[in-house]
Amino acid sequence: MRIALDHVFDRIGRRAEGADALIRSESQLTLRFETGRLKESALRQETGLNLRLVTGGRVGFAGTTDLSGIRALDDVVARALASASEGEACALAWPAATRRDPVRTFDDTVAGLDVATLAALGRRMVDQLARDGWQVSASVDRYVEETTFANTAGQIFAYRSTAVAVSADVTRVKGDDVLMAYDDVTAMTVPAGVELDAAVARIVTRMKRGERVVEPPEGKLPVLFTPSGSECLFLPLRQALSGKTVLQGISPLGDKVGEPAFDATLDLVDDPLHPGRTASRPADDEGVPSRRLPLIEQGVVRRFIYDLETAARAGTASTGHGRRGTFGKPVIAFSNLALRLGDADEAALLGAVGQGLVVEDLIGVGQGNVISGAFSHPVALAYRVDGGEITGRVKDAAVAGNAFELLKRIRMVGREGKWIGGSRLVPPIVLDAVSVARR
Image 1 (cartoon, rainbow, N blue to C red):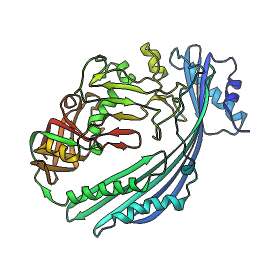
Image 2: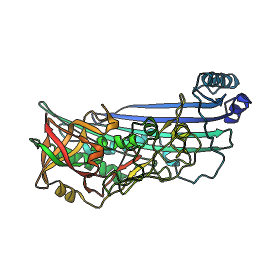
Image 3: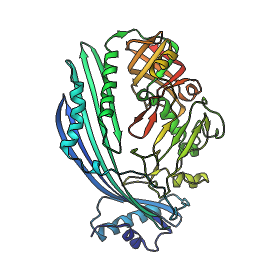
Image 4: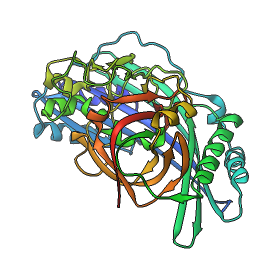
């Protein structure tokens, strides 16, 4: 007998004041290409149960990948009860049964993809990137998940989801000079040929622009951050909008709800109901129905994201942003984050830079004191701009600033956004007075 969620609550009985549980089955098929050839394929499959309960007002957790029968179920329940005996007190508000908006999360074609079809996606990119002196690698990943949730308040649902990620990277070595470029396409459905070709074109453009090495500019300059190069700006923003950092009192935005904290061109929305995106879902992993959530509107901070625990401790309601794995307690997680796109093409963006820099990739993003917004990173791939034109690649340069201050000085926003990792829509953005220095 395999465990079902009604069996979980039957075994708990009256030993808990409330409980919720999630079973998730995951399948990931991965293909790797090295030096232009298919190197390996691997299939990973796992099914896990995560159980949370409250007894004596305290919260306990347990997880297992053993779903073989009653003995395994009794073990996970016993461990959750033991965890609660040492757990923290928290009055969780279990979501009751309610209507959930429909959202497309599953594609039958993706679920049925075989190795040969997936390999053809990778080969399409590899073949188009083949050049003398270019070392080409690629990967193709197909994900299929099935999620089932229930709680003792009557909320129950199940859904399936799919995703395909195709990526490629190129390395060219000349003496002691190494030039690298990367791009990917990730979505719920099979990427169209035009999407793969566009990713190839972006890689080729970066490589060609990087052939000529020039001296880096210096000073406080306008900088164009491409979607792939903007993580130093938006990682601090994501952390600051988490209800956990607000609750801890360390979010720079914690006391700024209703205030204009950024340039009026900045809009940020979290939308788990966005069709076709990899983080879309009818409800979060704690049973809270999904809804579109504006976080920043015209530069004004509107709200933060919460899961059940942080909401209970903050005296507010969950926004439906709980994510859980097989083991441990749920954590706060965004779904599909989308920044408002502008209307500028690349020529206009470069013209807005004038004399400055284009940042495609940085080294070491995420290290250091991210929550403060301060960053200082060497460039991995960046270009000098003179007179609104890219003149070459810069090496031995670094950019620095504070994300929260720089986002108050947005000079221009581009219209060509990119879904980073399949769940973050980011446009190219020109910021004023970014510190650029030689290393």
